[in-house]
Length: 67
Image (cartoon, rainbow, N blue to C red; front, side, top):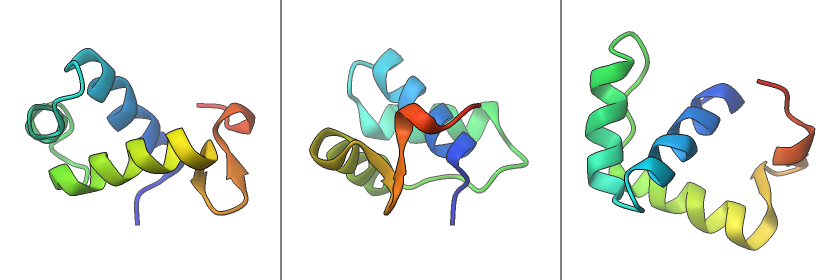
């Protein structure tokens, strides 16, 4: 499982990559070699979850997270 910080970093990179999940996954793995690298599908599901529920995890809204 990824932390809120991990998801936050993934989502920032996803925006910088113009919505390209594969490029985001590669860049994330390159930039954070000590962290668990995400699959492109993880990033796509994160985007879908945030757009539809505005939650990273069930019960945790993105705007309440401090990173």
